[in-house]
Length: 340
Image 1 (tube, helix red, strand yellow):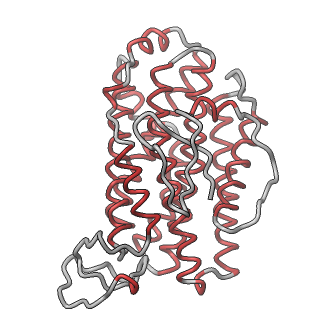
Image 2 (cartoon, one colour; image 1 turned 90 degrees about the vertical axis):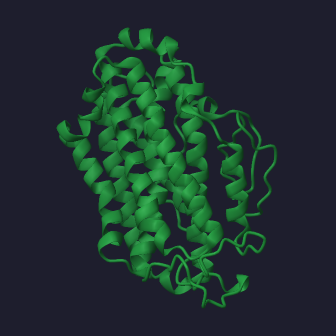
Image 3 (cartoon, one colour; image 1 turned 180 degrees about the vertical axis):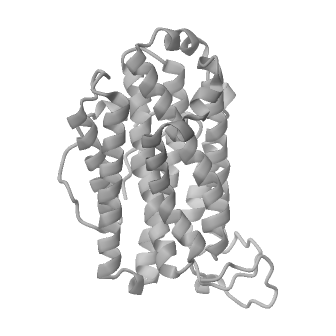
């Protein structure tokens, strides 16, 4: 697998010849001629979702944080530290590790936009940390000091590192699945702890910030699910029995890792998040992500905390991403019903 040329005037590739990767693009963004309509629709949706962290009022959270129990503070701090790591990793991963191999300009476009949004999320976490903490370094340094968090971070980064060290068609596709896991399991699980506090009437500013972040993450999840499903049609030779076994193993490891992490940070002390509920929710997320890319469910469990969806929603409108119908999708509007 080779990185695309950033300027390739000798290319004669037309729009129908475009490929997700392995194409021969000119380097010019001819956005009047588009092969992957879903990508351009997603681009417009991302633009309409533009927001800025300082729009969110964090005033009340300052006092709320002081009045949290020690268990609640621990869960909040560690969930926030984990989110900081993942958005930091993803900002660099998209620009340095994924986008250089994408040879479709309309997909390049949304990956650059996603990277911007991940960087924006990092600023959001900075606003949250600065609002509630007298020593922000404590939260930012958790990834160094907390060995459970470091173990999880190392595992998340491993598949991305595989692509960086050995860029092949297969390692690229596995990195797409790793992105799906990151965006659709790890982030969703992390958001849940903040919503749980908000459900109890605490840290409502933080929950509002997370709602905006999660609205972005929905489009990121859809992006990689669409990439995988497009490659399934474009490169069916890559979707071997071995790939399926590798993907299933990735999901099983992710469920185990995230379940251990969730139980570790809540310690059975966060109202509404027992160990069983944490694990079942993560298994539910894994099943949903697997079926969205053509694989069977592993766990066959229901969503044990459906109320989380109500906290995440801005409204109830729906968007069919594959058919590309985007309706009324602007700041303040959101659907988490990923109807494919």
